[in-house]
Image 1 (cartoon, rainbow, N blue to C red):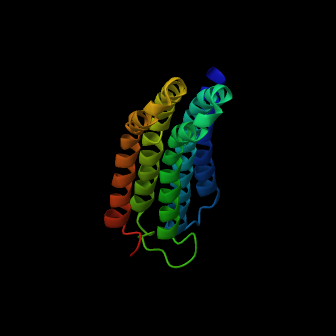
Image 2 (cartoon, rainbow, N blue to C red):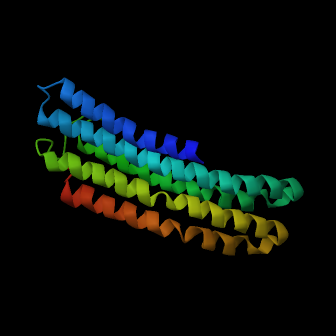
Image 3 (tube, rainbow, N blue to C red):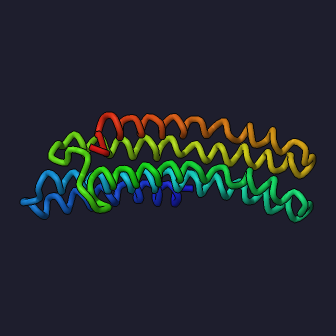
Amino acid sequence: MFGKKAIFIAMLLLPLLLVMSNATAQEKTTQEEKTQSMVILACTLAMAIAGIGSAIGLSLGGISASAVTAEKPEVFSRVLILEMLPMTQTIYAFITSILLLLGAGLLGGKAGMNLASPATGISSIFIGLLVGLTGLSAINQGLIASASITATGRNPEVAARGIIFAVMPETVAIFGFLVALLVLILGLKIFG
């Protein structure tokens, strides 16, 4: 368990260290470039944290789904839906990252957000953390999906109820994503 925690902490700190070392190595870096680096860090945090949560949630559901479909292959489509639910948190992080990159002009075009303001970069990092950390709800969603998959193996009629139970932890990620969208659009004005 210690190895997983160390890898997780290293994944969180590595992009920050790279940005900091890059900023100190180039004294002539403009504020716009620093802000763009912070936006990249924000995207990295969102994707890495939510991705880890989704990967754990997917594996929890996948273990149960494999066992259940080995016994009852006819419930494959029902348990597949349950097993895939924890992936949506990473989709929220992906959409947030695309919007951040667009707003910073890193995917082409003109930057919509104010790159001259240090607050923009810091706000971007907090947005990435918001979406990434609320995306950790995928772990609990995977646990509930796993139990629902097992229940569906015993009684295929309960699959819909299992989906409802498994969707509940996702509301945390949805709220985080919605707040991030509000800050991106209204606060940082990513579209200008």
